[in-house]
Image (cartoon, rainbow, N blue to C red; front, top):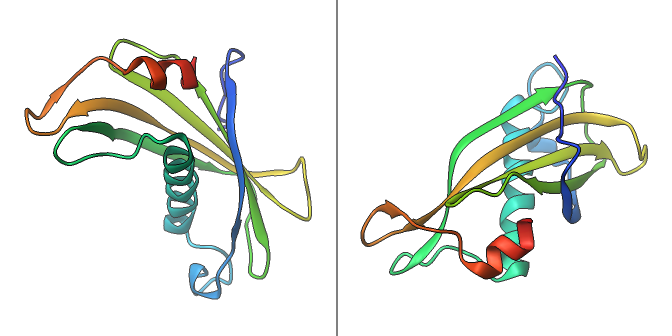
Length: 139
Protein backbone atom coordinates (compact mmCIF):
# COMPACT_ATOMS: atom_id res chain seq x y z
CA UNK A 1 0.00 0.00 0.00
CA UNK A 2 1.36 3.39 -0.92
CA UNK A 3 0.39 6.59 0.85
CA UNK A 4 -1.04 9.24 -1.42
CA UNK A 5 -0.11 12.74 -0.36
CA UNK A 6 -2.73 15.16 -1.68
CA UNK A 7 -1.70 17.18 -4.71
CA UNK A 8 -2.78 20.34 -2.92
CA UNK A 9 -0.27 20.38 -0.11
CA UNK A 10 2.10 22.86 1.38
CA UNK A 11 5.67 22.04 2.37
CA UNK A 12 5.85 23.28 5.95
CA UNK A 13 9.14 22.09 7.30
CA UNK A 14 12.25 20.00 6.75
CA UNK A 15 14.66 18.64 9.28
CA UNK A 16 17.17 15.86 9.77
CA UNK A 17 16.75 13.32 12.57
CA UNK A 18 19.66 11.05 13.52
CA UNK A 19 19.02 7.32 13.58
CA UNK A 20 20.09 6.19 17.05
CA UNK A 21 21.50 2.75 17.82
CA UNK A 22 18.62 2.24 20.26
CA UNK A 23 16.07 2.83 17.47
CA UNK A 24 16.89 -0.58 16.02
CA UNK A 25 15.29 -3.87 16.96
CA UNK A 26 16.51 -7.46 17.10
CA UNK A 27 16.11 -7.76 13.31
CA UNK A 28 18.78 -5.08 12.75
CA UNK A 29 16.53 -2.37 11.34
CA UNK A 30 14.74 0.62 12.82
CA UNK A 31 11.75 -0.54 14.85
CA UNK A 32 8.36 0.59 13.57
CA UNK A 33 7.67 2.60 16.74
CA UNK A 34 10.73 4.77 16.03
CA UNK A 35 9.18 5.98 12.77
CA UNK A 36 6.31 7.43 14.80
CA UNK A 37 8.89 9.17 17.03
CA UNK A 38 10.53 10.65 13.92
CA UNK A 39 7.13 11.92 12.75
CA UNK A 40 6.41 13.34 16.20
CA UNK A 41 9.84 14.98 16.42
CA UNK A 42 9.32 16.71 13.08
CA UNK A 43 5.78 17.80 13.92
CA UNK A 44 6.76 19.17 17.35
CA UNK A 45 9.87 20.91 16.01
CA UNK A 46 7.73 22.59 13.33
CA UNK A 47 5.11 23.61 15.91
CA UNK A 48 7.81 25.03 18.17
CA UNK A 49 9.37 26.99 15.30
CA UNK A 50 5.92 28.27 14.26
CA UNK A 51 5.01 29.29 17.81
CA UNK A 52 2.01 26.98 18.11
CA UNK A 53 2.93 24.61 20.93
CA UNK A 54 0.10 23.58 23.24
CA UNK A 55 -0.67 25.67 26.31
CA UNK A 56 -2.33 23.49 28.95
CA UNK A 57 -4.14 26.54 30.33
CA UNK A 58 -5.25 27.72 26.89
CA UNK A 59 -5.42 26.19 23.42
CA UNK A 60 -3.31 24.02 21.22
CA UNK A 61 -3.00 21.09 18.85
CA UNK A 62 -3.96 17.50 19.64
CA UNK A 63 -3.29 14.52 17.38
CA UNK A 64 -6.44 12.45 16.86
CA UNK A 65 -5.12 10.02 14.26
CA UNK A 66 -1.63 8.98 13.18
CA UNK A 67 -0.39 6.48 10.60
CA UNK A 68 2.77 5.35 8.87
CA UNK A 69 3.51 3.25 5.79
CA UNK A 70 6.86 1.50 5.53
CA UNK A 71 8.55 1.03 2.15
CA UNK A 72 12.21 0.31 2.89
CA UNK A 73 14.13 -0.54 6.04
CA UNK A 74 16.06 2.21 7.76
CA UNK A 75 19.23 1.11 9.53
CA UNK A 76 21.80 2.62 11.86
CA UNK A 77 23.96 4.63 11.27
CA UNK A 78 22.41 7.43 9.30
CA UNK A 79 20.17 10.45 9.31
CA UNK A 80 16.54 10.69 8.25
CA UNK A 81 15.52 13.66 6.12
CA UNK A 82 11.98 14.55 7.15
CA UNK A 83 9.76 16.62 4.84
CA UNK A 84 6.47 17.69 6.40
CA UNK A 85 3.47 18.96 4.47
CA UNK A 86 -0.01 20.22 5.39
CA UNK A 87 -3.32 19.96 3.62
CA UNK A 88 -7.07 20.03 4.09
CA UNK A 89 -7.56 22.70 6.75
CA UNK A 90 -11.06 22.48 8.17
CA UNK A 91 -12.82 24.55 10.77
CA UNK A 92 -11.01 22.86 13.68
CA UNK A 93 -8.56 20.45 12.00
CA UNK A 94 -5.76 20.08 9.49
CA UNK A 95 -3.75 17.19 8.08
CA UNK A 96 0.01 16.79 8.21
CA UNK A 97 1.99 14.40 6.04
CA UNK A 98 5.67 13.55 6.15
CA UNK A 99 8.08 11.62 4.02
CA UNK A 100 11.22 10.00 5.40
CA UNK A 101 14.35 9.67 3.26
CA UNK A 102 17.89 8.79 4.21
CA UNK A 103 19.86 12.03 4.10
CA UNK A 104 22.53 10.24 2.05
CA UNK A 105 19.91 8.99 -0.46
CA UNK A 106 17.72 12.02 -1.23
CA UNK A 107 14.61 11.29 -3.22
CA UNK A 108 14.28 7.68 -2.00
CA UNK A 109 11.31 7.50 0.35
CA UNK A 110 11.75 4.91 3.07
CA UNK A 111 8.48 5.64 4.87
CA UNK A 112 5.66 8.17 4.87
CA UNK A 113 3.06 8.98 7.45
CA UNK A 114 0.80 11.63 8.77
CA UNK A 115 -1.60 12.84 11.40
CA UNK A 116 -4.90 14.59 11.80
CA UNK A 117 -4.56 17.53 14.17
CA UNK A 118 -7.47 19.15 15.94
CA UNK A 119 -7.27 22.51 17.74
CA UNK A 120 -8.54 22.26 21.31
CA UNK A 121 -9.42 24.57 24.19
CA UNK A 122 -7.81 22.53 26.98
CA UNK A 123 -9.66 23.92 30.03
CA UNK A 124 -13.00 23.34 28.26
CA UNK A 125 -11.78 20.11 26.59
CA UNK A 126 -13.54 21.14 23.43
CA UNK A 127 -12.54 21.61 19.79
CA UNK A 128 -12.34 25.23 18.69
CA UNK A 129 -11.72 26.99 15.37
CA UNK A 130 -8.15 27.03 14.11
CA UNK A 131 -6.52 30.34 14.98
CA UNK A 132 -6.01 32.58 11.95
CA UNK A 133 -2.22 32.30 12.27
CA UNK A 134 -2.31 28.51 12.25
CA UNK A 135 -4.76 28.46 9.35
CA UNK A 136 -2.41 30.70 7.36
CA UNK A 137 0.48 28.35 8.08
CA UNK A 138 -1.31 25.22 6.86
CA UNK A 139 -3.33 26.68 3.97
